[in-house]
Image 1 (cartoon, one colour):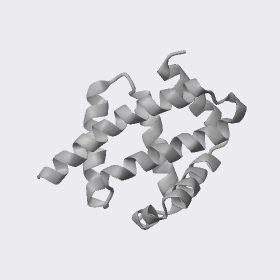
Image 2 (cartoon, helix red, strand yellow):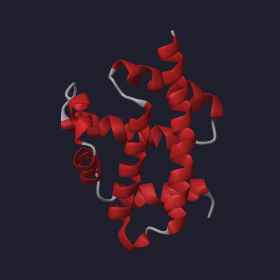
Image 3 (tube, helix red, strand yellow):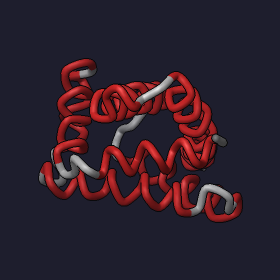
Image 4 (cartoon, helix red, strand yellow):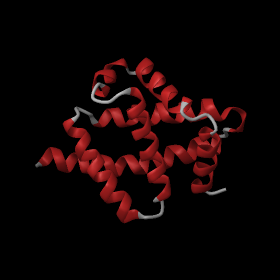
Length: 138
């Protein structure tokens, strides 16, 4: 299976447990990195969970559309600068997202899924971080 197939497959498994999975993501994130919790006070937990879910699904829907990903994720990164998000935090989110997916996919989760998510999240994060860097430079 290629990375896209592994991503879609694992998201399908995770969707079987929605909305529990996005709530669980935030539980893991706040347990591991409590210093980020104040950054999430603007929206309700449910609204924040929906935004996360929508962002992940949109990125997967456009995974082969480099122009869309560059523009959209660059803008997302730029917006997150104003929220106080640091570059380091992107790695924390990726770590917790992958941990949450692994937990919810259970025995179906494989090293291949883990690697595909790591590569993909890293590439997508690079686009967001580029947007954040441009915003900070202005």
